[in-house]
Image (cartoon, rainbow, N blue to C red; front, top):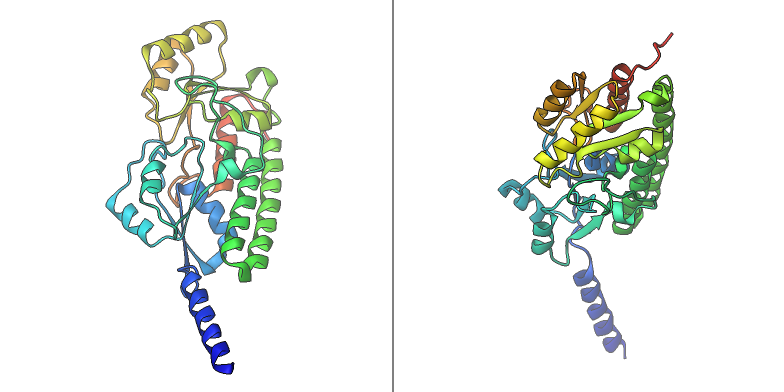
Length: 304
């Protein structure tokens, strides 16, 4: 009987070892789809998780194409945090190469945050993927990230949730700071006209009217019809300024600016952080920089 039990326990042990995740005896390796997601993941992950990114800073996440180094990194990755809701059309290639060892997390879809729809362009009416442009949306991302990491490394769950709590508090403070900086802009001036309609969530959070020439960057940019529509709007209602974004060529906004004799301000940061030495090196700096550019261009009250 004892010999039988020995064999049973041996088989159970082998089964448990075989079923254990590949990262049980090594570092959990995570990849974020773009730089904003990367920073949010790092806030929760701490130093015990390896965090990499697919789309480098300064590049357009919408129009990225996977590179050989991306593919090699994915082969050694356990979790991919991507935004979803159509932000990364190239994610289908990641899905095609994934297996049971790779977990893909569509953060925006899992987030407890009310989505808006894209306001114009080819994808009008579909969910707007730019939830992180509201700090409350970013906080909802933090929750998804913490829950996912805790599921994969339960022994570190308390640390993940502690860092998530700290991140949410920091985001709340950031939200208040941005509101205060934007308070002096008259309501009649609160129009954000950009090339991509990426400021819907920001506009909802801070009481702006946001418009774009097109909806998302991976559609046709600056068609004659879209440009004519915006020109007509500008003839009827003239905002104090137009804006261009860091990852989008400014040619279309520059043309509208010259045609309407309106100043062009920017860059605003949406789909990417800046370089480490730039004005949007992290998420908080990105929103503060955007608020400062808007404050200056739209006639905000001078700080005393």
